Image 1 (cartoon, rainbow, N blue to C red):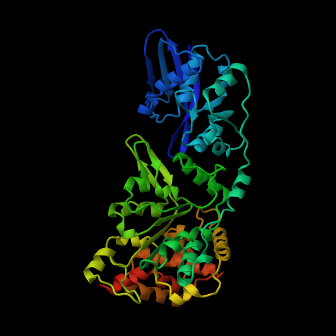
Image 2: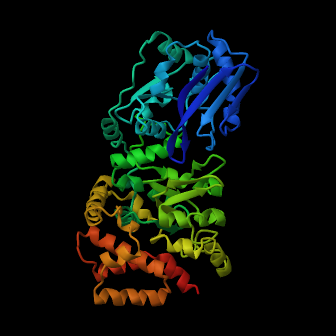
Image 3: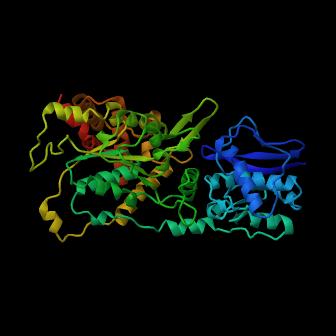
Length: 513
């Protein structure tokens, strides 16, 4: 007897419907075809044990399981449940199996029939709705994230018996209901480290405010203990809140990676990812036999913080160059090609030299000029060109630690940042650009016209600092953001001057050669 059930396979951050055909006929052995990987092939052992543990029998004739379309590789253990139901229906053990014709079923089976969590529940739910299925049966652990998709019945189950009882007796499963907008609004109120905790460092706070207002990349250069990491970790507190669309897109990435652990099933605050400097190329940009999103995709719509930047392997840093420009990463394999979103703010931190005290106001550097140059050269020029703000972080004066003056809270800075972002949203309406940092060359030159004094100032900086064409455009973008923070329609010479000052590493490298 031939029976069809339906599952779904995740590719990139999308999913496609898989038809699982089970045919029980004369002969012996069990075959799974349709490009299954080892995890899918091993499912037959889990399925057999789960079936027997729950009072059913496993056929001793030939069982053929075909997973269509057959030219797409199937991977993972999430196909256990639809295969098990197909076998039970094909052997007339499930009289109500016709109910499965309009449902997607996914879940990993334990040997006793318990259903374990899967990855990618959110994109699977989106594909289920797109393909006009009535609902989705999946592990109860994943039901909340799948319920973010409205107009779709989401049934969370914990055991094989719950599904078979539903099919045998028609006992209804209760759909999981979730108000995605309410869940989102409740989540965005979460708080984190605040700028108000930071004593002094007003110029660094100003630089990070500019970075947040325009979505610019920044690198913080300073001695150990000067506050680079502390300041970077507070950057998300001044970024605009996620929109619902951004939250859903970010949640899809976390769902595919199996890291969506928020109670609401939704990532409602901007991600802050801080990988260790021993990270590999693949872990940073994504990949693998079954491509998974890397750290740069997990930081999508948020912040990627690379502490001790020169300690990262050169190859790891260089693979970021293309994603920084295109705001996506493409993982290509022989038979398929996936695009993972990677629109993030890069915030990096580094010491100015191996000992960390080059140009320190009170401590002497023990490094030779050769060692300083060698240390700085670990970060390539092309990568530095893609970083808009180079900010020198100086140690806080002892008197500032004990001062009683109030520090500006993140909420106040965030209001200024959001006002600047609103200007940019109106400016770029309908273009697919959301902040100044995302402008291409043509848009930059069209939107940032300069007066003659501003042109002369910028030309002088180009000549003295030997800036590249890319650095020139970065300065224009930053100047536009500074003008937006000042609520000015025109970019004035003082805006250009401040943007040039925020290229301290260019000045430092130029002064040493």
